[in-house]
Each structure stands twice: as structure tokens, then as C-alpha cells.
Length: 356
Image (cartoon, rainbow, N blue to C red):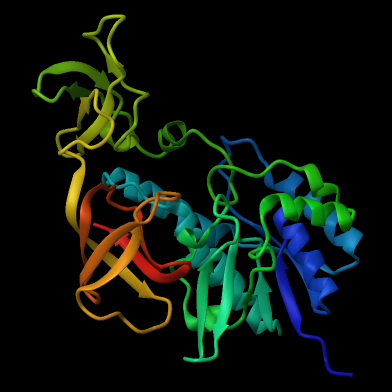
């Protein structure tokens, strides 16, 4: 008998991680369920205790060991504080990417490996394939295009992928629920979690007001005329249409969308035009914190597909400087500084960076 490979699977209490654990057991792995406890502010409804109970029920049903891993301090510093600081500086951060980088495939990954785990596994909708031709692990989009989460995983490297499993990556969501029923999991009909990684759904403005002081500023139209006010430019993102007050309006007015903001002057500029507006469109952008999953940067001026926000249709671009991060789009794009630009070749996710 060969020794079973040991897998530490992140059990969140949801259907995807539950089915992931069940599939791994079926495939003959030695599975241990890990619930990752993260920081939650006092002013938000406490959800982690119920999620932990659900995870315990899943582990008990499957007959696997269960461990709670407390990463509250790491989460507060690496995800929550990062997000607050970014908003304070006028950026639109991507906390899910940072959560994957520092928590799931950072602190959890390292903790599991030092305790004898051959692999860690999560319920992400993505595929990890080994290419025998070049001896590289490749991150591919999920077979479920609606649920694909490869956009949030561009920070992975070869070391992490060589010890990571995505058991539900080959399935569509409806197939995962069928599998949950087959395994008699109580999470079969449990609703998908939404909102911030681990913390859940929250009103970002209400959350940030606990850390960033409100400061009334003016709302300007495209002609730079004052037409309203707001609570502080840091609380708003490009494209947003709620949360500010328009004083000069009539019942027939179309909704206003934020097309620009200035943190220094605490000013918002709004327009009736949501998209395809010159103030929002960029032909060329720069990115930082670049990661190429293969460990090899592409050739200069190579043509790729890119996504600058989650679920956006892939766009054609040329990477001018693969190491320094200059991208030229075939067609101008609406971008938000702080979000991720993620590169693809068909289903293959090559890597990405943070938009400057």
C-alpha cells in the first residue's frame, strides 16, 4: 500500500468547499478540513461562527478531521488595512486578490505545508493543469464561465500551483450542487456567499466610515459647475451612481455617474454618460506588482487578451514592457486604479498586475 497524499482543504461552510472535500476523499486522498477564521469588525454582524459550525457539520458528515486556523491578525493587516489605505488614497482595491495572495495561498498554504500537507485545496472555480511539454503548471479558467475565478488568482506561482488542487474547477455550478446531493451534504441548497472575501456582503461606504473621517465635498458636472455634494471622495468609485446628492435636478433628469474624482480637492465629477466617455477611457496604462505564473515574462510587444475587471469580456492588448508593465489596448478601456489587469491566452491565465 502506498501512503495516501495528505490534503488540507479550506472548508468555508459553503457548497463549493464541501464538494471539494468530498471529491478528494472519493479520489483517495487523506483529507483534513481547515476552517480559516479571519478578522471581522465589531460593528458588522458576526458570521464566522455560523460558517464554522456549517464547516464542522460537513467535516463530521464526511468523517474527516477538522481544524480551526486563526488568521485574524494576518487578515486585518494584509487585507482589511490594505483595502482601507487604498480607498483613502483614491484607489479602487481588489481585496479578494490580496486575500488569495496573503491568506489562502500565503499564511494558510505555508502553515499547511509545514504540517505535512502534500497539497492544499480550495473551492475556487479554476483549473490547475500540468504541461508536460514545458514542465510547467498552468492556471486555466474554469469550465463554468459565469463562476470562473482565475481573475482573482493571477498572483499564484509555480511553487503554489505544484501543491494546490481545485477539485470543482472542471464542473459547472449546477453540477456541483448535483454532486452535493449525491454526497448527501446539507450545503446542497445553501446560497453562495457574496461580498468581501470571508467577511461577506457589506456596504463599502458604511464600512469605510468607521476608519476614514467624513468630509463634505462638492459634486461637479462636466462643465465644472457645482451641482451637489458628497461625504468624502475616498468613499466613491468610478462608475458609481449612488451615495452623493444632486441639488440641481428635475424629475426628468437621467442618473449621474461618477467619471472622475480628486482626493486632494475632495471633488467628484459626474456625467449622465456611464461609459465610452473620454474622461474614463485609457488607451495605455501602467501596472505594478507584476506576476507571471510561469515565472517567465513574455516577449515585448506580444499580443494578448486582458481583463481589467471581473467578468469583463476579454480585450486585445499589446504588452510594451513585460517587466515594467506598460499595456496598450487595441480599443480604449475604462479602468480603475488599484484593480487588477489579468492576461490570458484562450483559457490560460498568464498572470497580471495592479493598475496604476
